[in-house]
Image (cartoon, rainbow, N blue to C red):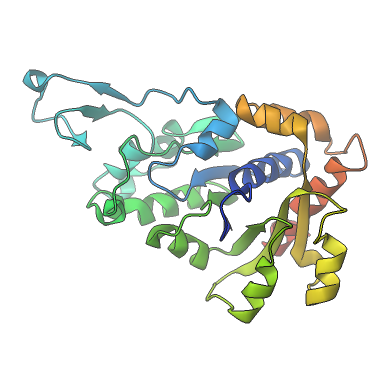
Length: 283
């Protein structure tokens, strides 16, 4: 099961919305979840959980120390990859991508239940998705998907072929938007070719803004269960900057998934449950 988050506009909070929704899902339901980026080098999602100091997954080695057993990526004279996505892409055979190997190359957000796959240390170039190792990405994603109940994929506002492919083929497509633009109208005027069911998500939501949930449902006759909102929350956005979203969402929802208030918590619980229900993961 794959749920992809994407936005046609920058600044729609796609990575943030995915992070808090995935954390809420863990608090509310007995699911195992993987969160991965829809980009090769994009570390934004990982930073939501672990801060800007990314785990070291490479080390410089002088040319004289190279051996025939050394597998290099990026510039041949610079990196030896030890873990993360790069390591999984190096596996020559699909059977090498066992559950133990996959999870060893991921970082735990919630012990034994939620993992994040670190992105590549290589820089992205225009040709990155055509790289011979990256062509193995499909089988890496298939392996990750087989070991978790659901995989959340952060496609951001990326326009590259790979991110579009992920979003097009996902079981549920979460289209992120803000309240100042008419994304829903454009969606219905030029419907894209998606495999999965589409869910509209308003990020940094204010009930008194130009477009609120009720207005959008009325104007475009959107089913109530296809439109969600995550209100603006300054405390959580501060936690995001420090890489502490996981613990902060848990504090809001409590161990039993019961919100402590009637605003942010209520909308987050509603939105999370609607997305999971659309995916067939909860009733």
